[in-house]
Image (tube, rainbow, N blue to C red; front, side):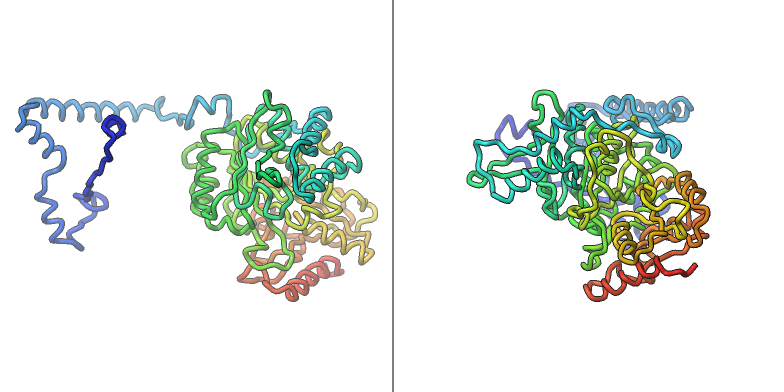
Length: 499
């Protein structure tokens, strides 16, 4: 680069690489390439060639070369002896200055409550900014209506939808000095057009990010990028970004949950294993749309079972939320701790606009993330059946309960899947001690979803009756007719009287 900048000429390096001794010390490359490696064995190494050239040109002599060899080998021996000393084998965190103040925690530390509620004045300020458009620019009528709806839901009806909960999480974190980076496929507007983090003026196509205008001089920066469809490359970059920026909420969103399979190497080698392998923490967040709504395989399942299979000890968080308020606290928790863990969130599709998937302003200004949500209606004295479920399927079961008029069925939502909130689950068992039927319900096939994970990690699951689709090789039917039939069968089985 120095040569190119000084002389204004390109540089071409003709580099021939070869292995002299094979793949390892026990390998014999002549087994497969006898002629080539016979020639290589006679070929001097680059150090010898370069030394002979410098000696021939009178720049150095042979004594200089010998001295360099001895000094280099001595340095290697000294470093080897130092590395064997116990006090030098302590793991030094990567980028230790940037990570100063962060601690490593186990599952016990991960289970401690975190203060994530915000002052109502702060929430009002964020909500006002993201629900008003500048008067001097013209926007599409649909955009104007969408932003006006935000204003109405916050300041009038107080029924906040999923997008509002998510944007309020980002906005409040920005006001607390954190940066937020969001990348993925169509994330600027959201795959299902719910987020609209970037708004464009109709005539000029000028981009407007309202989140960056809450208190511009005294807030963090919100960065959002529509990324290419190479999940492997994008996730790798974002993982590195989160590594270099522990005080930035770094999020990658898949267009559909199962699209993360393109980044499987990154997930297996880094996201799930890096803290165990190299003692490196990372707070990257995955948003993986998940839910069975009659679409095809890759457009239905985020492969919950894959991530839960990778969970062990204290390596990451996995969640499947049902309310905007809980999602708000979950995202804020990611930044408000003095440690960093990857967070996998199975986000909804149909719930983005579901009339029941709403939260009040009070849910944002009080409380915190709920790992488990009890049934708010059915009491322990009236319940005859206790159903545990997770995510979007809760609302399907809720609608079916009203339709069937079976108000003696209590439905409990498991919002955090890992670490599994065993204490809270057992408390529900104890609370509903008079139930005659205990059920785990999921919309995924029996060999997918959460059921197998529960059987491995929660011995008490053996007393539960699984209500699932049958065993299938494909995550979803790919046929709307088959979907409705299978979905109904699972729900009917939940509400049947079988024990």
